[in-house]
Each structure stands twice: as C-alpha cells, then as structure tokens.
Amino acid sequence: MIDLKEITIQDLKTPLENFWNLAANKTELLRKNYKSDTGSPVITKAGKYVPQGWTDWTQGFQFGIPLLIFDATGADDLLGKAKEDIKAKMPAHLSHFGVHDHGFNTISTYGNLLRLGNQGKINLESYEREYYELAIKMSASVQARRWSQIEDGGFIYSFNGPHSLFVDTIRSCRVLLMATKLGHQLYGENDQKIDMLDRAIKHGLATAKYGIFYGETDRTYDEWGRTAHESVFNMNDGRYRCPNSQQGFSGFTTWTRGLAWAMAGFTEILEFIREQNLQFENRKEVEATFMKAAKATCDFFITNTPPDGVPYWDTGAPNLHKLGDYLNKPSDPYNDFEPVDSSATAIGAQGLFRLANLLSKEDAAAAEKYKKAALNSLSTLLKEPYISSEPAHEGILLHGIYHRPNNWDYIPKGSNIPYGESCMWGDYHMTEVCLMAWRMLKGESPYKFFK
Image (tube, rainbow, N blue to C red; front, side):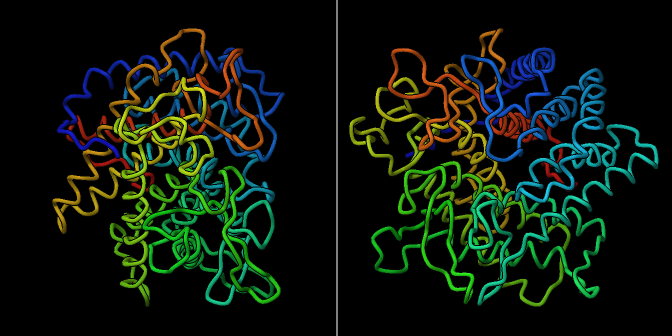
C-alpha cells in the first residue's frame, strides 16, 4: 500500500527544478538522434528510442513534451522546434482511421498549442488558432466515428474491432471533450447529427460499467476498483460477454497501466463536466457513476501498490509471490521475477491529484488521502532509480513497460526481466504530472488540458 506520509508540494521544489533541465536535455537528445523515417519512437532499448509496431499512437507525446517544458520554463527554442515538428509530422495522424488513440496524439500537440495560446503564453495568429482548432475537430470526428452500439449505450471500439472496448480509451476521450468545447458537429449517414459529448459520456458509462469492478457480485475477480484492460461484446446482439486483456497478464487480473488510464480519464471528464457546467438530461447519474469509478480505481491503485508509489506491471503477475511481502516494501525494478511499471505511476498520479481537487470541497479527508498518495508517488519518480540521470540515455523516466506478454521490452544481459528503459507515454505523462505539481508549487491555477 502506498505510504500516506506527510509530504508537501514545497518538498518537491528542488527536484522539480532539476527535472526541467533534465527533461529539456533529453528532448534535445532525442530530436538530434532519432531518425523519424523509421516510425514514431515508442520505447528505448539499451537507452535508445526505437519504434515498436502495433499502432502509431506515440508521436504526439514526443512533440508534446517540449510544449509542456516550455509551459514551465519559457524555453522558446523548444517551442519553435516543437511547432516545426508538429507541422511536418502530425497532419497524417489526424485522419488515421486505424487507431482509437486520437486524444493522445492530438491533445498532446495541437491541443497544447491551442491551450498555450488561450492562456496568453504564446501569441497565435488567427490562422494558427483556426488550424489547431480544425485539427482537433478533425481528429475528434475520426475517433467518434469508431462507434459500436450495444444494448445499453455504446463505445469507441479499439483496433481489435467493433467487439472490443479498451479501458485506455477513456483518457483519449479528451479530444471529444475539446471538440465539444469548440462547438464542433459531426455528421453521419443521411446527415445524422452525432453529438461528441454524448459519445464521450456513453463511452465513459460503458467503461465504468464493464471495465471497472466494484465488489458487488460473487465473481471471484470482482473487487473494488479492479480494472479489465478489454471488455468483449457479442456484436450480433450487443451483449457483454467477458473481460480480457491485451497487455496485462489476463482478463481476470489488473494491468496497472490500464488502471492508471482509468484513474486519469474519469477524473478529467468530471473536471470538464463541472467546469464547463454542462447541462444534459442524466448529468447527476453520470457524475455519480464517474466519481464512483474514479474513487474505486484510485483506491485500488493505492492498496495494490508498494509504499513508494510504483506498482508492478500487473497485480496478478504470476511470479509476484516470489517477491515476498512486496506491497509492504519499496518497489524493486531490479528484481529477478516481475518488472515494475513507472509509466503507470506517472499517469495514475495525475488521476490522484485530479480526484483530490474534485473532492477538496466535499470530502476534505478523502481529498487529503489522494493528494498524499500522488505527492509520494511523484516524489519517488523524481529520484533515482526512476529519473533518468545518465546523459546518454534518451529517456526521461526509467523502468516503464510496454508489452510484457509479447516480450517487447528490452531485457538487459544477465536479467530475467526488463528494466532500465523508457517509453514515450511514460516520459510525456511524467512531464505532464510535473507541470501539474509545478503550477501547484507556484500557486497557479491547476493544469487542465481544456483551459
């Protein structure tokens, strides 16, 4: 269980200051070394970023990181280079009909540029603003079009096909929310009007109902906050069939990065609904459902993670028992049996921070619990062995895992497990959660993608 010891944002001041220098250096190193004609960077192998084929969902993170660093530090050189790269490389992603990850690629790039302009941190010419807004609208339309109707709603289906609901996608729904804010209208066959917000909410309701468990049945895998990576449906009649997993150990265990995506995704949608004061028919029911899912997943993360806040890659990984009482001692990325996943911490800490903010006025004790868990988790990531201090290593955050079942992660010579490597989403979300903490430290308004 994560240690809820007393720690304040002021305790992270020096580590955060050091982080911005490190992240800027790593960003420049990757831009200099990486050959983009080989595909988008995904994971490092022996400290060098390489592509890893499945779907192209990580390039937005690469170009979004320097935008976040600029937000924190005002580094104009990084801003200029990021804008050049986005202009050259990101348009192809906007009409990519083969992925469900548009919110990752698009909000990290065009969304960050629009946000920085709206906040007065950069000057946007009118054509730039229109370009970024159009990119977001286009990307959201492509994502919203991946729609499966089921007996009690619908969902944005994964690259596996119309039967497949991934828990990851709840975080990628941010692009639908942004398109909603921009007033975009999607049209389908026979000029059918498709409401972006309605699709985001229905997808969230399906994820909360089928992808998150609450300990309310007698099924052996049903416990408060456990998460399934994939929910499988019979598309002949739209009925739910079973949990499954693509990157976790099984459908009956919890892949911790999927858990973290849910933590961040549900809390972000709740923020959006409340701050935009959206009015729709079943708002109270939706808020209650999303809050229940957010609390459940955050509680599960706290309970099933070692005291320092870094979980192992799956809570049901087959060799965890060989680590002994692993939930009551610091995570060990160099052990002989199962890898940790620091990227799950970087993503999950965001969900913990956001949930704390959402509860700050209605449940101070719970808010304090989630905030302490977030601060302790981030404190661990800002130190070795998780921060990538080796100058030649191209990653920012060490000990991230991509796909353990497929054995895609680099295993150092003499080791039984992967360790010591970075991933593009881990680096991005580490930078994003550090920006959240940095704004807290400086007394600024909380970082939100849609502000």
